[in-house]
Length: 267
Image (tube, rainbow, N blue to C red):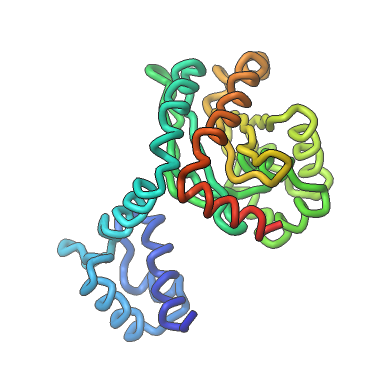
């Protein structure tokens, strides 16, 4: 990957986290580039339609072109289309947010969701983001399909992240992480409380090849006042059944085949 391409991707990733826009000077500082080089790179991204400049204050924002590419890819793959009715059914039963994440190399990325909460608190984080494996139900579910050594190697490459960015119970040590992973391995699904975010709980089951690696996970997430430990026990059979159904329904999709290769290569 060329230096210019690397810088362009850094800028796109930065802007993806700031829909309100980012000033030229802030982009240059965050990407460690001179102002002049940053301005030229942004001008190129503007010219090809991936970035636009807000006239009011001159800040830069992403256009929907990048999003459109991702949505077009997911639509062509077929996996989300076949999985969506299954996610919808689980969301209706759980009355919480249900999401599907797939393995992409060493990353785990959310690609589809169904919102089952019709009133009260609604948990609805951004889609298309890579999952922090060490402090998420999705990450723990994926890691539970590996040996302890493989799981720790994967987390070591990604890192634990900054504790202030997650919940008060986010694991920050190998011992704490392995406790979560081993519990998920024993139960067949992961369960966390105030690990990913304060006041929130989540559970996740792996979408796993028969006698093989996981190619994704299905999660249920919501406020702790609703998604309690007792409620998780009630939902666990449906969650695991949905993960198996997603596996069976997705075999013909191109995204399934790609995820399968990614999962195997990552191991």
